[in-house]
Length: 124
Image (cartoon, rainbow, N blue to C red):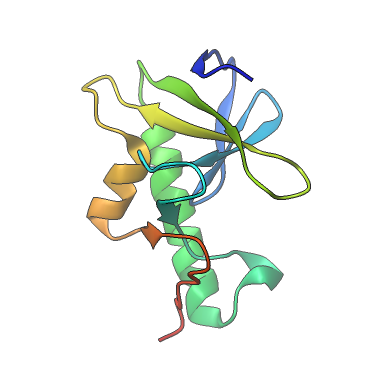
C-alpha cells in the first residue's frame, strides 16, 4: 500500500484511537512511527481492565468524536497496517490548522504514548 491522502465520505470514532472511514477501521498514529511509537487510549467494554478504564475510554471517544466533527480534516495513510487480524491502516488525521488529532488527544491527556511491548495501565 502506498502512503497518501485517504478520502472519507463518513468518518466516525470507534474508540479513542480508532476511527471508521467509510466502514473501515483505522488506527491513529499520533504522528508516531509505525511499530515504533504512537498513541494509546483506554480500552472500551470487555477489553477494559477496570471500571475506571471503561469510563476514561468513553470520555476519550467523546473527545475524538468532537474533533472528527470539524471541517477540513485530512486523513493521511502512513503506508502501514497494524498487526491485528483486521490489519487496520495506520493513519494521521490533521485538522484544518495542521494539528494532528492523535497528538492533540495526547496533549489534552485523553491518550498516552505507546511503544512496542508497552501496556498503559489506566486503572492506577
